[in-house]
Length: 188
Image 1 (cartoon, rainbow, N blue to C red):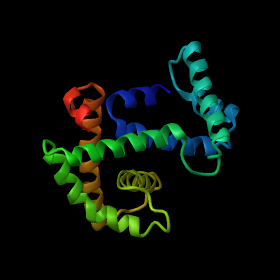
Image 2: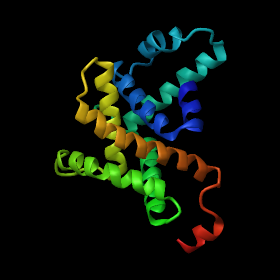
Image 3: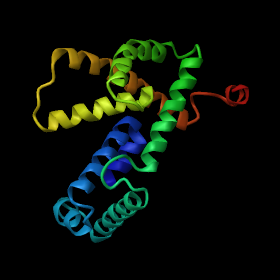
Image 4: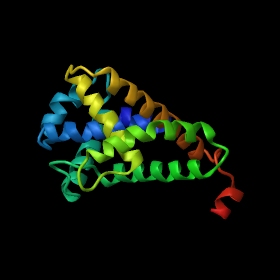
């Protein structure tokens, strides 16, 4: 809750990856709030009781959403899918606007990697932006397991990372109303 709130304000890409990790942690504890309390919440040092209570309620609400949305075994919560959708929409707007050539270059630099990943993902491949986040999350999991990442994979990930970092920076500007003006939105 505390980390998610901070990441949401600072970097939407890190927030999304963190929330995917939280979903997996909740699954790893069998959606058992008492196990989460014991192994996560109670292990955070220097928390007052109100904050501990708020964290428990946050995890309980996520568990409830996971059950209602039927993402207990896999998949992502609607709130996280909405974030991916918002980022995909922003990506399209940035690509359509000639003022954001840095993003356009980064996107097209990453596109061969994205196309390759999508071609391997089965019958219903994710969109470009979600594919990037899937790759970043898979890499995060590999690193946590101590698995080695090849030089070719590292190069591909660097391209995806550049693109998603720019997208996250533009997302923050867009949320602050600094990216597209009212005139831009009226003509869309």
